[in-house]
Image 1 (cartoon, rainbow, N blue to C red):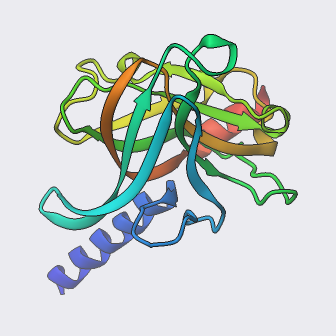
Image 2 (cartoon, rainbow, N blue to C red):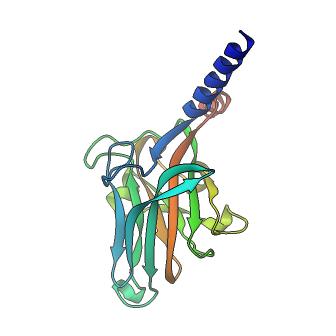
Length: 208
């Protein structure tokens, strides 16, 4: 009886933790769509370029599939002589469809690992207005949130949504990983999540 009760408590705790997060993508499938059912792919402008694939891996002893991002960012040539741009985006809404309401969430989380260590990118978000003009607001480079920067070990990158500034959070369009520093490299990503606010945080936001 005691063991059954303990298992029930553990199962409830697992469900509670899962309910505090929304899985945007775990990169397990073959399609260029995320777990929200909308498009995800690379973006690029010559001479910079990026490529994406998925590969088998292991995280904390568990087999999984991860997203492999290969990039080549240039700082010269292309539009305005600034070398173009490259990165990866994942939509939160269908094109010409309803926008995603991010008000119940407080942070974005993703597992990240570099092939060599020292790689860098910026995480951006676009609401309806930013998506219309084809750009996003960047929270800053990953080094702002990972004291050691990207290494060859898996790390969880967590960025508060407040760091994206005055966004129209009820009408969000996309998440962006933008390679902003010149150079070539490979970055792996897994388990892209949105972390929910607690009930207390929701009440405090409502009072504001």
